[in-house]
Length: 616
Image (cartoon, rainbow, N blue to C red; front, side, top):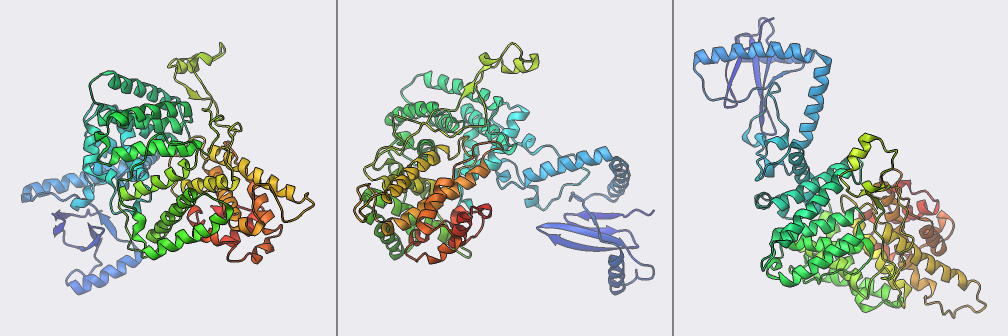
């Protein structure tokens, strides 16, 4: 069979063997040179060759030939290169006929493609596509992470975990990435800072391990816990080095330790780390004055950890940036705040709590506006994360903790190598000699011992819990902590059960209209109760799907009972709801919590039918 001979220089075809037709197409900046055999008698003119091409294309698709652009060559070198390419093509054809090799190539190609398509790849290595070049399929391609340059000696596993970190974490540190003007975690300076300190690099590697385990469906592993133990020791050495000041890198790593402790359910460790950070921040105020990435990570460790267990944040939150919600017209913001106030004040909610929920409603509204189709609103990332944490901070802090301090959420049960029995196989025993704590089981029951903090108005606690659940689901963490929403939902279900118990007692009272149960009339509570029960039901349902197989099943029946009480036992009763009854659901819409668009009334009907399959 006659071989195709074609020469390409700088992306342009400069010569071809007589008897072949050539066409050039461009796709996404890549120039393709397509060759095919011309039909007999149609080689002479361009017009006839075009007709011949159409006839051939109808029988056989275009054959794509990929070649890298090379500097100009002499005619002799060009001939030798062409012969070499023909011989290489023969060898490649023989190799690809082996089934085993074909399977390996396919697997490698799929893995590389997933890495190259990552939006953060440009931070670590240059993108060859930006130079108009396409790798030859016959060229050996190393793993993406093996091509990176690191400031410290790295193992192959460590390099891969750093790549996993940059492929996943930056967009999670600044969630809703597509709504922001830019992402500070994707700048070259971010990578330079990581390469400048070994402790930070260890922190990044450990976080990459965490993400890698999540991708594999594992919430924790011996490797992660052993690595964290080594990392703790490294940070402790930094803290013991002495000196009048503590470096930003060390502060950042303590933040990572607190975040990691929250993830694996070691809430005692989180509290300990946050107490240390509180002492550090009291001394190192200048290190945090810029309000940049370090401040954001510090607040993430504090506020997101406190939200997980329903406790007070350890640190003061000083605003450093303007609200991104100022992008909304002033009249729209006032209207939202007035609507929230009109529904909460009749329920006896304190002004500070009303103000906190109003801030949540305005913040959620600007997110809806920015994510709307055709919207030109883009949010400043620092202002976004500042207002996001401020909203959660206000909901957690005023008027006090959500969880009773006498019954704090306990850490998850762990075991060490000392628990290994004599019957443990030798190989398994060798693995446990690291004496690193491991999660005992993923079949974790909800923390039944936690109790809601005492409040003079139980509806106030209910609204605050529902609001925290709302924003946690609106901007979810990834990866989720091992316990997920377990603590918040345990507090919510107990509070809701208390409210429903008081309402049932009303039916047994002889006098109607005079109640001393701390609640209000049904019409006043109805918009708030429907919204709170709906949010809790949605979050519990979505949370079940995020838990690993065999994990916690969040209790949802109490929320459905609440909806049945305020709406009715039949799905058709939903049609009788007035606009006022669903007013709170309009202000703090549930659409942002769902994985697909669903009308509020249709969702309520599905819940009353006890069919929530349409949530995802």
